[in-house]
Length: 65
Image 1 (cartoon, one colour):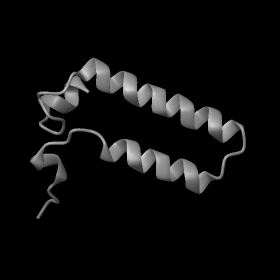
Image 2 (spheres, rainbow, N blue to C red):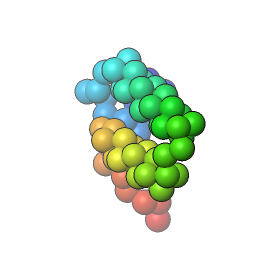
Image 3 (cartoon, one colour):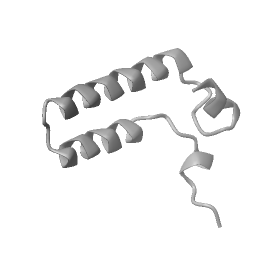
Image 4 (tube, rainbow, N blue to C red):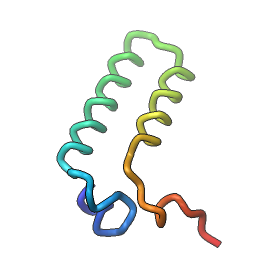
């Protein structure tokens, strides 16, 4: 997260430790649900939702020309 902040992809106002803990929690939850047989489409949707919650900068959300 700190590297993404330095690169300008994640908001500098965000706490990189908290974001890292959030992503680790989501990843472990998805891993456990996958092992329990949860529909992969549900896991993909959860992953996409978690990624959309990251505080991205305008630079990170703008497509390259």
